[in-house]
Length: 198
Image 1 (tube, one colour):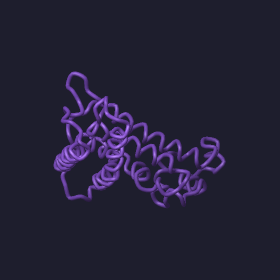
Image 2 (cartoon, rainbow, N blue to C red):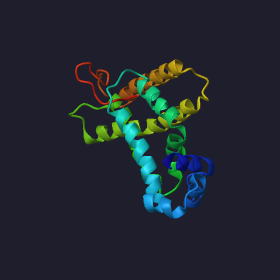
Image 3 (cartoon, rainbow, N blue to C red):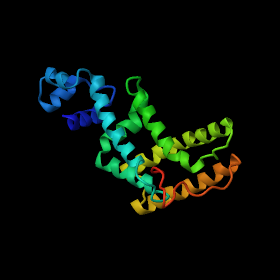
Image 4 (cartoon, rainbow, N blue to C red):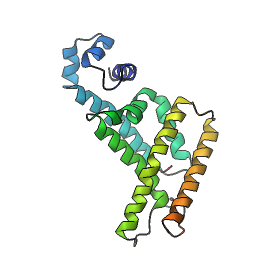
């Protein structure tokens, strides 16, 4: 039923789809769907909670190098394209789904933060500037992911991972320089890996 709901949301639009549309697709009485999901919001919450949980699982994995996080995220998107594209594209456009878009954005920005992490003794102002730098990089992460899922960027998967990795490395270097951050090791250690990053 959830897969059918995702297909209907993808076809009709997240905000134009009704519970009746979903019931018609699965040939069920609408009341039966309401027994599973008491509201349209509950259904949307179940869908986005599931895909966000998968992104969190990716985020908890050790970092494997520049571009690896994007490759893994695109792999998830290709396995579940309609749902991840709904979250990345359409969820921002309506109050009922904005919390999910915000949660996704926060998670993706959090994956970028290790690259521009300030020293522990940094001022609150510098810590805020570093967090802002990660948030400003997040729209690029989203667009690169969408292009990779849809395979519309003209790159092979290997080339895309290398391209994205090179951009992250250049962004990291430029951001650390612009903010006056000291040189720092890569955002991982083979002995003590941090959560996944891009």
